[in-house]
Image (cartoon, rainbow, N blue to C red):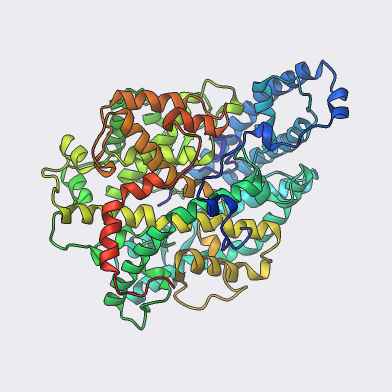
Length: 635
């Protein structure tokens, strides 16, 4: 499961909850030259003032601008905390009343942000101090809550739509008569079944839930776009792309450059996995040189493929890690699993979680009410009120998820004393990458060190098996992470019309992932994009694509700080306080500086780069080249 965070925790980037333009076929100029596109700071990205505008900005404007952002910071804290409390209540107890309360709290926040963003654009004086300039910039690119139209009724409707869509998703079930299965039960089938028709039934059952969301989402897009236009953006997608200390066009080029860098590794994995699935299900169902049916990859959205590892295991019988079995043998429960995650962070010299974390978090699915089980991390009161919301299962996947969510929590912890406008990640990909970078240190040697396993696989076969397990999660996810927002950017811009929602969705899934639906999915009978939580919850998704690349870049930098000298895939920073010091220095910046400066604090470079990811998987890539020799790869 992909993890996210919640409403009022990343105040300016993921409200209300937590928790695509162009085909991308042409290389951006930076990629053609083989050089990463350098990010520009917000000062360079914004339109320069002409001399007359500067003259009009009187000497008092600097003081007025500072007073404005100070006032906004206080008011925003009050409204964001109220929204966070309402969102927590709704996520942990879905009822009509909690949905209504959350909608009302988010409506107030939307109203405030719409008014505030417009006012922020009036401060253009060149004498404004850098910190105030940074705060004004962050206000201008605030993407969440979605910008609301000025009309009060439309604003109210936008908030209602957000709450209603997430409620439908959270309560969704696939039913046959009186017998119903929720998403968790359906995911279990997707993960464990190897029967083609049983998988198809679970897949179609859940995707049917999204059909109800389609007209609501279409209305939501119209209202959110209207709000974005009122604050100077062409559409909501352009606003989202503006939040990366570079122009929207540059950011789109940058994501395409990064995808081009890592795509060859994905294509090799796809080719190998497709061959194994054809062996299992038959070439009539999985064509040797075509698209893989989306329901055969062990995950409801085919975003991560780790659950089909037994079908594609490189060396059956060779040393392999059964982390899930080890956790169960050691009698881990939900609290013990989270304690394990905390112990990794504290081994680096970071602080223990506050006592309130253990009192207020939701670690199990309650039996007496409907909840949103999608894992998320929170600081509800924006004062170190750390929590996670999760329906934990004792398995390897959720062990990694716990580390991911705690990565968010520790980010919040180290910047919560900053002004609210700086309580955010350097960019949203940073927030998602922290916990996953830590999880890369869950090596066999680390698992042995903490007593979870006895022997460390030491031979080449064991290494390839382990790297395949990692690749089915990390590499398989990359195109999915990119295409979600590619689809939305096209929807927001109008390039994809409402009557083409599903057609465009599957065209992108074919192009980027090499996947096809298991059966016909014509418009307007289906809305398969809506079967993914982040669509009805309106959570930007490119952050996860960036995070899958950044986590390896961060991992390499922290390993170097820890003095590691061997292959990158062997490094664990557990217990290395030198790495922890470098991590804390970056976390404490929040969003007070443009992301290239935060990047430099941890890696020494101001560029995002996929080289560390490719280095990490070098043994597996060499092995895949050997396995795919003579095959017709691609689709």
